[in-house]
Length: 215
Image 1: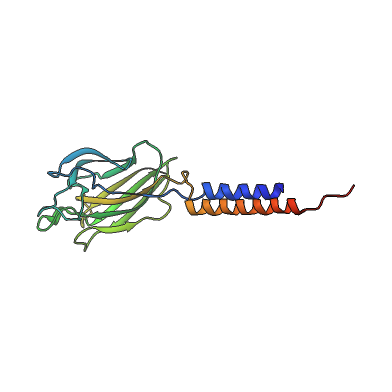
Image 2: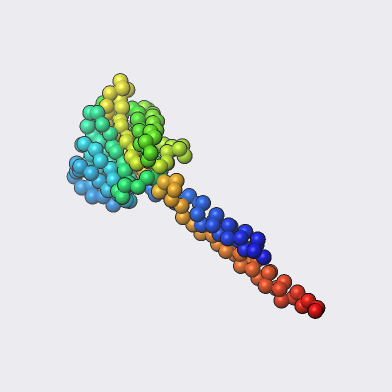
């Protein structure tokens, strides 16, 4: 009986705590992009984006690439990048993003031809990766490996074909709460609870039908 109770407890614990937290797709559709304003910093979905020459592109027009929605861009072709942190300072995971050179032709010479991504991890580790933008007429979608977790910051830098800084646009940034944050998955939790209820009913039925011991 005690062994079964322990087993049920372990099932509930696993269902509740080992399922990864649902990730968040950060878009900028709720940000006011009227007039394509330049901002010092921007917060969306509990995350903060900072950069010099950080611009909210809400009206692409003939100057900026259209993405069908509001996006952000670092329009300066100078050293630096767009840095992402969680607003409350806790670690997070990064699993995908959309990127492009922000300028439409004929002013597209300042556009990034690749994205250099640098991640700083809690505890002092670093991660780096590069993603090719050449040949794209608009935004491209890029996924990251599962190792991009426990991050304190992630910086997206636009690089031109001659390896110099270039303008970069971002949208649909996929983040998670990090490897130490988990939530209960409803289907798994429901299955565990149903199993526990069913086994409990069987045990009660057996106790009722068990004949009394003779003295």
